[in-house]
Length: 404
Ligand code: PMT
Image 1 (spheres, rainbow, N blue to C red):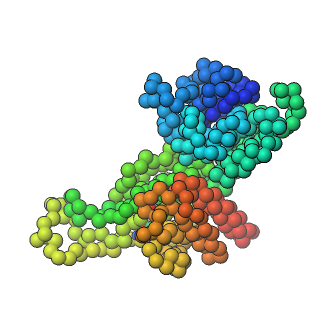
Image 2: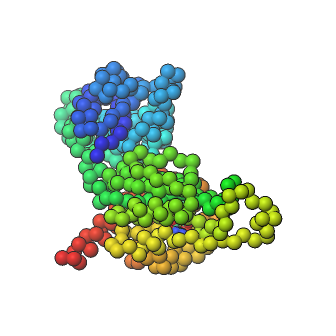
Image 3: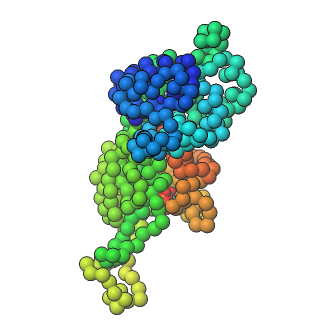
């Protein structure tokens, strides 16, 4: 699967090897853009990377000429994967502190893409406890560290600190995608609210922003899954690489899900589907007199329950948004709606849940419970998708064993 890769190049003699890395990635069909630190430019010129990548190279955070097309936000959006090779001790220290004092660190801070660091430095710098503390901190925050390799160093010494060879870096990138149990699987994800019209100008809806479902769709796409994102109205841009189906009402979402869920491997219901709709959808704007003092409502189909009736059915994962008795209500919902997994989020007067950038969830299956602390939804989505990958791998292994 071809990816949009942002290659960050920081200062070090090994920077020349990254020219070959760009060439190899492009040969495999990946789109590569390059961002360089100031010191990297002392080793290799931006023009060299421009020639091999076929794109202008980002060098400055505050550059009026590039701000319109190549600013840190566009580069952050472009990347499915960020790889910094070589990663010097300096850039690792700055990233570990959350600094954004040049283009490359700002892109890393602004991006939701996974970031891999490929260190290259003198072996004593690598073993220094400060560098090692930074490595641990970066790992805690989800950065992957590939290498370094051991061998003769440019300074004439021998030790651990060499950049991995370009072909090894390519393999790390491609293995990361193809190693996920979700690689090549079809995942249907619902997201956002539904709108239930009362007349041409009014509707019943809820506070769902779609952020949780879109973040899950993006994380699943980055694992090499084929994602079909079915979304109610939101202000978000659909993730690159996902098939996008836009709907408005619960009835439309129900129809779109039933059309796409056949032959899927996983159904993930993150949408806040309206449980009911006004029984009348007037073609004219309603008046106080026409509506009266009560509104007749009709119950909407339960989409996830309908998916649970399919035979064969995909692995079904739902969300439960509860204001009270979170665990017991979520667990009962899982059983009532024939779900394999329920992801419960507390909503109401707590941080997270609806229309927030943050969320904290508890995941329940018939056998186990796993808690995920409050964190940005984009990070939580990566952790949930990793959890779902393990669960799916275990579940499908067992069912194959049972068949045998
Ligand atoms: O969109 P955000 O602002 O990022 O907020 C995320 C979220 C809080 C909306 C999300 O994390 C979440 O909890 N989504 C489910 C909210 C919900 O409506 O839960 P529920 O308890 O009403 O429904 C349980 C499950 O049944 C859900 O998977 C829901 O998609 C599904 N359902 C509900 C009703 C219905 N008619 N059909 C369904 O499929």
